[in-house]
Image (cartoon, rainbow, N blue to C red; front, side, top):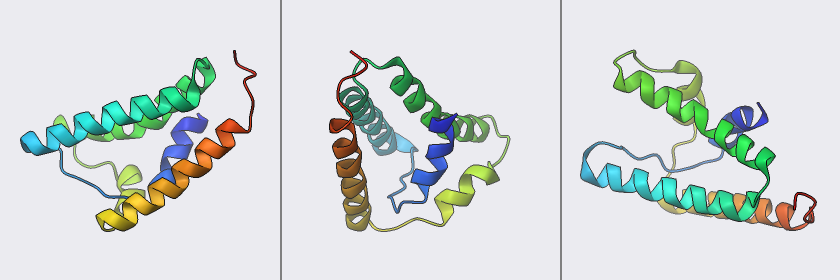
Amino acid sequence: MIGFASHFLLDSVPHQEYSIEGSNGKACLATDAVLSAAFTAIIAGRSPLAWCGATGAVVPDLISFSQRRMGLGSTNWHDWAHGRTATGLLPSLAAQAVLSGVLVAFSAGRGDEDA
C-alpha cells in the first residue's frame, strides 16, 4: 500500500513524460522498464518487502495504461499528479538524480538486516 501511495508523491516531483506510441515510444518504455528494474534490484536487493513496495508503486501506471488501451478513458486520479509536474528534460533529470541520490543514501544507511 505504501508503494501505491508513494507513486503519487513521486509523481509530484518534476519529471519528463513521453509518449509510448510508435517505435521510439516503445524503445523509451523498454529502457524505462529495464533501468527501473535494475535500480530496484540495487536498492531492494533480496528484500521481498521492498520488491512488493516497488511493484505496488507501478500499479497506478499499469491501471492508467490498461484503461486507455481498452478505451475506458482517462484516470483522473492518476492524471491529477502527472498533469501538474511536466517539465523539460534537463530539470527532470536533475530532480530525479537528486531524489535517486537521497534514496541510495537512505538505503545504504539502513544496513543489511534483510539478508
